[in-house]
Amino acid sequence: MKLGSRFLSKFAGCIIAVLSSFDRVIFKGHLPFGDLGHLNAYVDRVLKMRRKDFLALLQTNSEALITHARQTVEQAGRPYLYLQGKCRKEKLIQKLIRQDRLTDGLVAVLCCQETCRTVKLRYAEGRPELVFAPRPQRVVYYYWLDAQFGLMYVRLQSWFPYTIQIYVNGHDWLARQMLRRKLGFTQRDNAFIALEDPQKAQHLADRFVQLPWIKLLSRFARQVNPLLKQPWLGRGGYYWVTQQAEYSTDVLFQSRQQLAPLYRRLLDFAAVNLSAADILSFLGRKLHGNFQGEVLTDCKKDRLPGARVKHRVKDNWLKMYDKFGQILRIETVINQPREFRVRRCRTRNGRRQMVWCPMNKGVANLYQYQRIGRTANARYLDAISVVSDPGPAYCRVQHLARPVIQNGRSYAGFNPARQEQVRLLQALLDGKYALHGFRNADIRMACYPARTTLEETKRQRSALGRVFRRLHVRGLLAKIPRTRRWRVTHQGQKLLGAVVQLYHHGLATAA
Image (cartoon, rainbow, N blue to C red; front, side):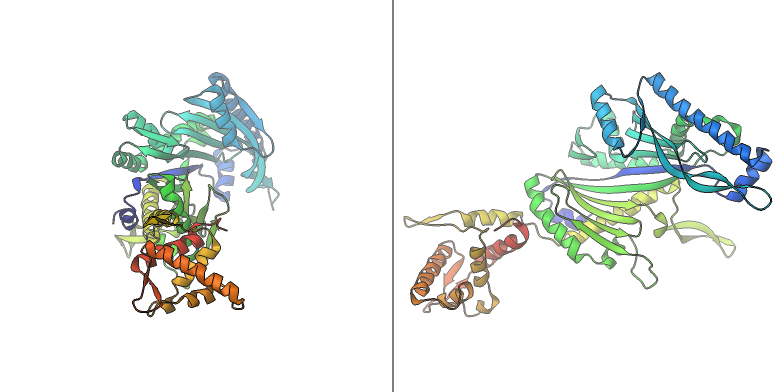
């Protein structure tokens, strides 16, 4: 099935391009010391040192990592900043890039205190033992403007087990690829608001998973961790996993005016109509009695721009939001891949066969992240395709608001934002008048208080007669022959219904 085919075909006249790509991707590297028994045996038998001396070695190694970071920035002529308290690292880095007009190379190295998983010595029966525990330590962040990935960072713990984290952005990588191939585009933040050739851009975006990730990530690790050159630590190297992956589908509209009214309806529909079973089905799951978890929907419409809806299934979620008022973005975020099942070759009853297994975090499964994210986004787009575009309705309402001249006489227009006028139109559309029509008195009783004086009744009757005439010259009302009754025409049903619908759902600030 083509990506979001029903949605794209329905709004094809408003859409310029569609692009599916990885956005934020975080890789994590682990050294093979996850088991406490293995760690203590390694210190005793391979390193052949006392366990308390191992902690002294870690202190020396920590200072070596900090010294290496300082030397790296000195060679590049960039700052080394020690941060205390809360700080927006991305804003600081962006400020340095603008201030120094950087285009490539090292931007800065940031050092801060964070609580991370490390080792400590615990007294035990017979002899002390090394155990894993969270402890505050120095963590260094290397920020680069890389020739291949654009702005990225490498985060390294200064204490054992020297866990490393690498962040890249799929849109920044794609921008560099299009530049090399001289494809025109306009990038703003982490989105493209113009693409010269969307099909070629999509083809390039699909190649993101085919990169030699283990080789690339290991190269970055060697640049920041000189301890990997030591035989006792570097033989096994890091085992790389995908810690978090965001896969987005961007639907680029021609203008903000075309997306804005539709987006408000999409938010309402997604927040109210999409059930837990629907959200699970988008992610390839079924709602059953053994499901242990929560499916939550959170919609924030009080911030414009920035209104969004998020559907959370355990630690994975689906999001819908708009970028710059022109891009509708559907995004699948995978933090817990074992919630998804993939086909893998396993030994069952002594023979190899393909079976369904929980997906693991290994970086080799990145192509599965892409498949799951693209499929989930497509299902979500198809689900919200039932929402109608109010844009044409707004155009029709504009004609209703303009005055009409007939036989030299001008008939005033209507204000679709006035509550009393919308209430009157709502009364005209009441289903009980569909068969025999309505009289002036019927609408007067629905729109005005029941107890009025005779003079007020005459004034209200005359006012409604003028309203009926204004609707009649526009072809929205028709007189039933040989009666005093009126009926709403087919054109009036569509237009007046659109006015009422827009007042309640599309004109949030109407009085």
